[in-house]
Length: 592
Image 1 (cartoon, rainbow, N blue to C red):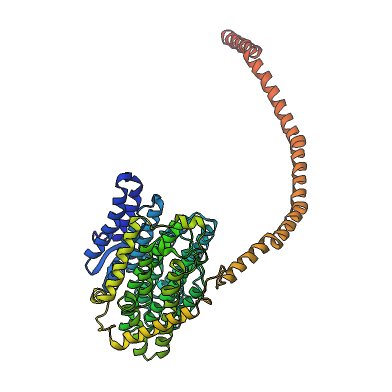
Image 2: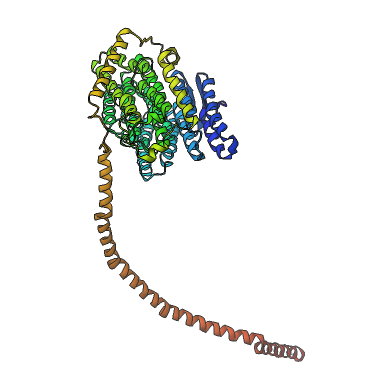
């Protein structure tokens, strides 16, 4: 290593490993101290390249700190504090450990200066975050976790294959902007790996499936890190790639449509992650400095307001055990503070003036118009209207107002969540409003010094018109928009059904053929072989062993007799013989 440098991911990982050893009385303090320490380390880092490690013939760079990585590291470190505060009362140490390892993977990927280091932390994210789904303990969450893991492993394989091919062509693992004008096979494989984590259709169905099944606290972490880390990677490697413009617009509209149809509040929010990330992907595809600033600003704002929305709906799930609109309603009487914070999140994500989404989303739309891609700007504005329809209106109305569909036991259980959850939502709500009112706080952190003023009379009036007409349409068509206890089929249906078909084929026809082949092999191969082996064994035992054993017995008998002769008569006879021979020799000497 070139020099000693403390990585914020190291602080989180060491803190996670030490957590089970912390006394119960000090555990809550530790749960706040560790992410605060990691965030403080992020703030203290200066720009430059650090922690270069020579491994075999490669150089791994763990610390590339610049304007782009700093702003992503800042918001993710801040979200780690908020998420830990929200789940402060969770008793299960392993859930906190998984969450911190997940954040460490995200931060490691953001500060990685080479593709191998990026891949290492990319996989840490996938394998640690899946536990935030499994810890809910339901059969559905177990299945969702496995699907989540399989999809991300497939994306990781694509990423690794692209990295290997890229190294074979360039002899470099450096993670910089690829040649987006002439993408090769290696580049496409890397891009696919990034798009899987960004939940770009048709590679997106894992997101609502998994985030809707995660624990109430786990979903707050998951909504903030995986997709936004993918957005960072796209900015770093594929800014200006034209195909991303179309994919981003499709995401923005696709997520809105499915969110409107969704009955489960957290699945609705998950679908809307796809829509909001679509704005960022489109901004990356546009590639101008204003568009990149817009993508970064929107990722920053999105982490906060989407975390706030998941905290609000997670609080409802935690206190009532329910998350479906058809099982809720009228909860403003029981949970007024949670309603207020959720409403702030809804207004922020809808880009209402004075809220965070207004100062970030508009930057991407403006970049689309400035780049003479009018269709991009208009379609993203249309998606913004859909956002207000379902997240700004549908979520607050059908959970907090509307018809009370709560079961008696649900209504009795409903109340404000614990103080730490309220505090986390209050802090996030303040930040959503603060960013929307004081734009320099966010704009000064953006990677490019491009002037942009969101609060123009034209922009404010245009936005208010879109939002107010959307609100009018909602209340005129409220009966048509009422949620139904149905499941919307998505693009995961083909591979789910394909998986079932594959399993049936494996269990029925293939197993039948396998059994038949096995029976033929048994009857025609194993049975004759065993009979032949038995015959050979008998011949060996009776004939060969008989001859060998007989000869051995005869030789043994001769040897025994010789031993007896050696011990007695033979020795005496030899003595007499030698004695007689000596007498004869002496006589001959005397007489001759």
